Length: 511
Image (cartoon, rainbow, N blue to C red; front, side, top):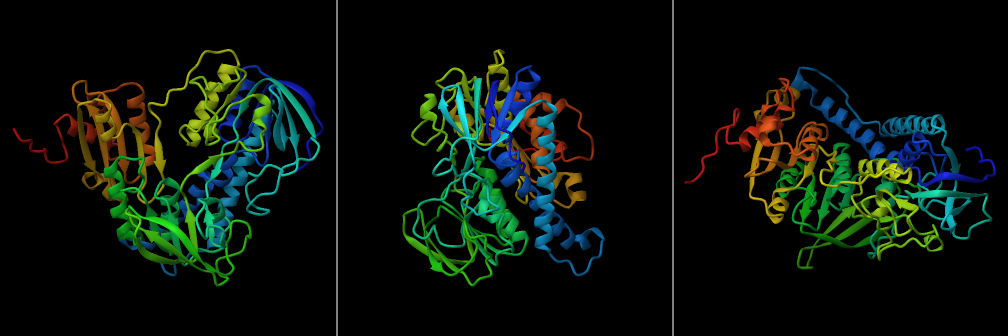
């Protein structure tokens, strides 16, 4: 990358971090007539584009194509010699990431945003010094999370009337015996694997862990997924988590819920977080598993152990104390519904706020924050945030689960429509799963929707619209849906919740 020209400039708005929150905030503030600078350590797009959402989805698409071709005979298509070229999978992933990061860089330039490469440290509430970036904990090709341990003299000094902090988060590696062994990785380390591991233990059954378990299994690995909660995807409706467990089990993934990995043993070379080597160097790991009572129950052999158990904020090294910005005991920055910190002219958005750690939430926060620092009165509303997990089958949700709705005092009505009753799902060749709707019994207002099955991540948009705008079951049921489509499942679920199921048998109710 060409070194930035020395700058000692003042801007209307300074954005720190170029992820899906930071670059969106910078573009929107510029569109609103502000002069804007953005400071970031690496290519635009942040973790989402470089080390998260996009690269994993590119690889999951390769897995989906592989699985489709393997089952092509069912569709009347004969194939021979189907095999995986993992290096080509990685090359395709890298190409997609490169094209998209280049596109974002072009958009920033087209909107007049001044982009400065480096690590920002506050020197006072309106000023940051920009230093050379520190080394990646994953080696030369890893994400640049680390702040320079001994800062060199600043290359630039930037000041601004308003500042937006959008520095994101990084995967959390728990402090367990053996967690520093080669072959013990987070999702970031998984991207650096040159080969598919023969045996993988994935710790954490939330979205990150579930997606990597699904990916590794489709690519041929022997996979065990360990989750301490009673169900996979513990933030989702429990029925969805149980359904995913059954599907994973059918695919050959060993699922251990209500279990915990307490230690890792082993020695040998391999894919560590910082060595960049492969799993083919004779590494032998053993993950020690305990049950819900803390009793040892199993020792799992593995070539890699991947932890997907949470994230921590990238606030260390920002020198927030020099700006007077408060953090909580975990390092996150508390914000108001206008995204303001305790310092009125400094806002924070995205994972660093500790709210809902999703890329699309960061982008929406960015739009609100950019408007607020530009003088508009806007607030963020988290009541209808969709979430998607790109496993096989996909999972998506929005609004309240059935249990949450009852805890909130609603008398609920629920209904499920199975994809097995949908013509398009049969034609598509994917009939596992369902759409479940949760509504208030008296008003019929849609409180939540939960989907597991084909196209779930796209289907959830209709339900998100319903929850956002207070639509009712009748509104969903009366909306004409194209046939044959997967989207009909949402309409059919609404009909079922109204007691008027069309393509499923009526539920017999006592009394």
